[in-house]
Length: 196
Image (cartoon, rainbow, N blue to C red):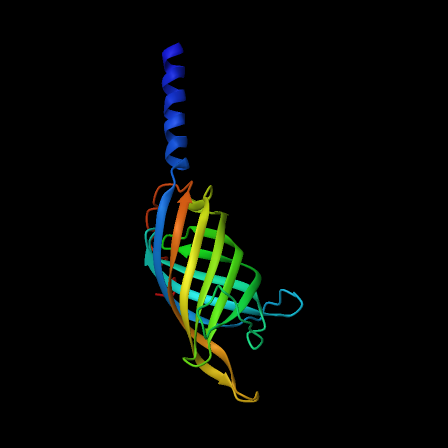
């Protein structure tokens, strides 16, 4: 009986060790950004939304992020941005990854900023996210992910002088570490349409 208890304890510690293992994450994405209908009600900010799809270490995913950004028409110089680009910080935000198979990974924005190049009409953006859990294989997940991206304007608001960009195309990557990830889910077959 004592040996069975010892074996059970070792197995539990082995499983806990697998869940505690920190894994490197690399993912690429593309998608769009623009104003959000959600209002985070933070003074001096505008609420923006990301809608991305991509692939990488954790599999295929979509990502939706909502955040409060300082008004991008009022950027300022900063040593965080290259010469000729202006700095615009992000105040707060969070997002959800949805992976193939249905598992969700939830993240909270801890820091973020854009380096805006008004001459090249593009921005280079950085966001740092803390992983706060999720569902399915990410139920016990933790870690940190850094997003880096290049954003290009697609549509402009012509009522402002000069016209201000309001809708953007984005490409970039996530890098970081994650722990507490369960085993890969088996793909669920899509339900048949009952009308067929």
